[in-house]
Length: 105
Image (cartoon, rainbow, N blue to C red; front, top):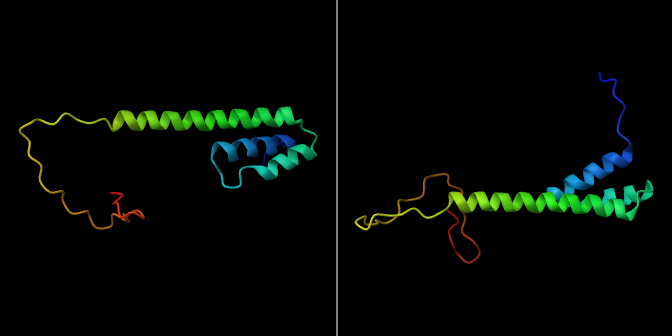
């Protein structure tokens, strides 16, 4: 059992709001905004939490995209290499085509 002092509910609501936004949670943290307003947190303070959370979310997305782009760069193929038909998909791939019929794997 811990002897630590619990966080004030307004701090918990701020952390939850930021996490919801940064994680793109479907609930968007809207409940936490109402709680923060009820605790007397100013709109400027709420806006700061939202701004920071969005910045972190967007920055993480940019970093993931950059890492993906780096790892997905085309590889030079020797001109003498001939291409065969692709092998059949392994069993259990779980790939379903898109609505337009494009295979995803």
